[in-house]
Image 1 (cartoon, helix red, strand yellow):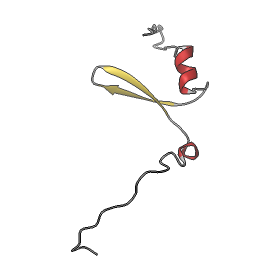
Image 2 (tube, helix red, strand yellow):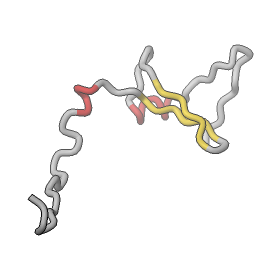
Image 3 (spheres, one colour):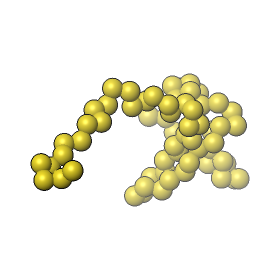
Length: 68
């Protein structure tokens, strides 16, 4: 587990191994969430990048026999 230090300006540096494994780039935006007693950073990805990420998912919906 890697630890980081909060600067006097309340800034943190995301460790290199985490940035590289997540594909984060300088200037990229992340969403910050407080979840229970922890902080989570979620990268905001462009909608174009998300295209096709559900490829192969079963989209069929079983219908009740008495419904149209």
